[in-house]
Image (cartoon, rainbow, N blue to C red):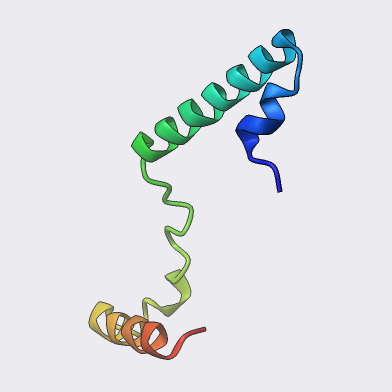
Length: 70
């Protein structure tokens, strides 16, 4: 199996530049994602439980689920 470097070296210079540009784009996207704001799309997901369950009970349920798996 060829390495990425070996494959790129077989390309003409203009295509090698495209590969380099794409790799830099991927690295920048990864860096930005790591620094990005937290995603709170889960907020409110347990709203229907708030009248019947305390936050402590929810924490216990979460801990149990993590211990046993999905």
